[in-house]
Length: 220
Image 1 (tube, one colour):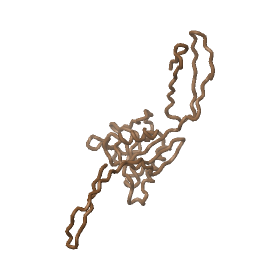
Image 2 (image 1 turned 45 degrees about the vertical axis):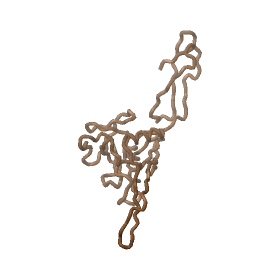
Image 3 (image 1 turned 135 degrees about the vertical axis):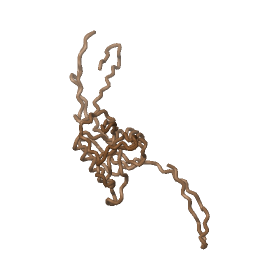
């Protein structure tokens, strides 16, 4: 945002006048405070103050998404990241809360990736509370909050006091077709299967396309 800072000049009688006004435009830069990898996934702790929608967009522009938690191993990695938030001991911290890629309704979590919410939530004490009936976004506490690093909390969508955790999925390393070659007679059809590596890729959507639909067409 834009901030104005006044510089004052005093005389010996402590009279003063505004000497100069400085206008400063501070921008979020996507600063990574810490990161950790697990099972081919990269998790990045970002300290920028953004709304949830802005954080979601920033992750997508960087090729990732707001982090989701679907296993105890992932929860442990998120907790580890949240413990790194305090760079000055436990008396100071970067952010009290960090956004995740989850929405909350009636105490139930839904992931923006469409993954099943099969992992048992690690709610902080007294959460979720849907304060003022407007907290529908999932966050986790930092170590400096004193409420348990990595424990879950619900928050408003328009809050701008949170950082966020980005998750970058594994990239495809190989694509195998079976069979890799086929010969078709007019009116004949055959099935082709595809295998992507590594196995832990979340999104395995394949887009099939024919270069000449007058010769051959493809049905997903």
